Length: 504
Image (cartoon, rainbow, N blue to C red):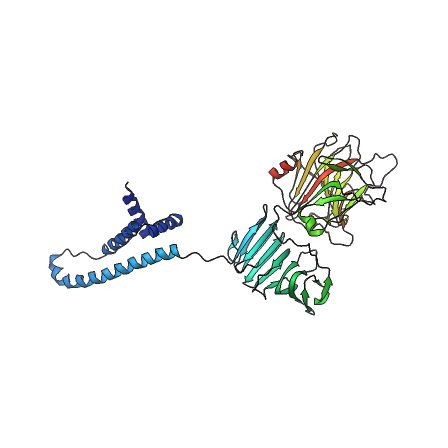
């Protein structure tokens, strides 16, 4: 088939409307840059219209219809010309006129999981439009409006764009930076309304907190949306939380409490246990920058764990049931996805004990805490515990060697454990559900780690008194060495787990 035959076939299919959208778009671009192809389109349009005119074959009527056909031919030529002009204009319009710019664009941190929900459209991915809701289930997403205003939302969060100057935040935490000239932008939650007066600010609407606004630059007007509907104008360095009956309560402004740019990876915190020289240990990662985490190791306390040679640099040795190391980090709250990974080593004769934990220890009432414990030399395996329930590994770890362990905890669904995976030395490890032998256990639908209760425990390594099982005479000590603990706000992939499991 010659090139001319090929283009003529395409023209026929184009006029009949049988080209796929992708092929049609490519063909129209060719028409814009190929005068010969456009001439052929006009020629075929003329022939197609001409073939629709009636043919006079009866000589008896030829003379009668001659004049009428003359008039029809003239009208037909005008119609064909109009059709050609319309076709050409349509093609050129579709090619030359650029598509409308999206209302808002979305960029994310690697590993972020999100969807866009629109009324009547279900779930979709892409740019955000008015009336649509961005749902961030893992990671961090940055929404940038056409005027340059932007919002950085941390999972879990839902942001609905109601118009060019109004966004609604629910169930999450977000940083807003309003572009110059866009003053008056409104951010609302179910309990709080914030009107920008030329500023950068953070809004916290997480379930475990009272709704809050923190001003980092410029001014905002904050108004409670119910009760007394108190209102206040806030300046840089000021913050309020919505109290009871619609009041506004001044609180400390968290200057570093909100991410202001996309981090290079999922939010995480790393404990390498490198001494700082002032009886403390180092922590790093995006979460540390937000929450100013410190690891406490008071020199006057005899129960301090020992600094040892670890997998990489220094590690931590828990050599007694009463030894523990407390941090100032409350841990990851709620029922969001998270990954806990660490290096660990046990001797052959160690008794059981807690490796790390955080949350509200409410017994059998709720699954409101997370704890990783070692079962002792009888089984020498690990347990992920919450609410007197646990998931138990199979492999014995009392080999005297370093092992890398990772627990991946997804969000729960219904009356069952959250989906949990465990990797030991980079390989998937079977998990078996167990419950306490005596007494009640927490219902499975109560899984929600509580970090903001006055009695909640921050992330702690070792057995913080009072221990769950008090030391008895003759009981063997709990001996555990740990290093490179990483807690991630999200689910790491198997490849990422295997990378962490490689010895430095």
